[in-house]
Length: 175
Image 1 (cartoon, rainbow, N blue to C red):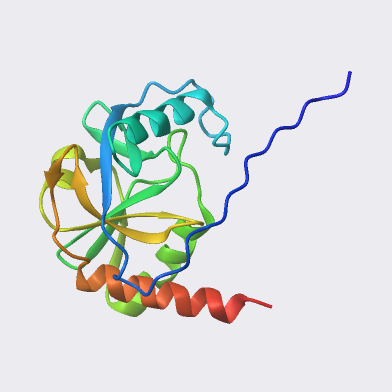
Image 2 (cartoon, rainbow, N blue to C red):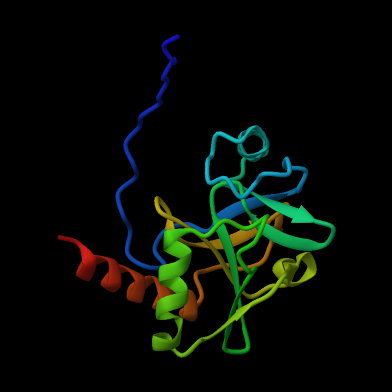
């Protein structure tokens, strides 16, 4: 039998300067993904349903929460910045190793941030301060609201510095 292949293609929005893009609105969803969520694919039904829930709520992304621990977004990784530390959940069965995530961890020290890989409690993410999501198409996108609660009014200085360093790094690596 011949497999059926289906694609949806749309243009990416133009890249913006670090910190100039609008803040991202997120919702949280319970992490009820199936037990093989380490397979890197947006085709996982729970991820698709989470993205759909975010869209219905007028949000840009859905964040999976297991108990009170933030895992990752439906198509992104999650970071917070507190007291000079860049904090993100460690790679594991519920957090995928994104290439953008890896690049951010690589450059964090160059902008004066200490990398800490540990679970992020939902209360920490909901506390006003610097937070962002990362993905190949978004690069770094600062978080302005979660579940209709404002956590930031503008892109923070550390997030802006990381985004600038990320763009410098990725431009240097292009053929």
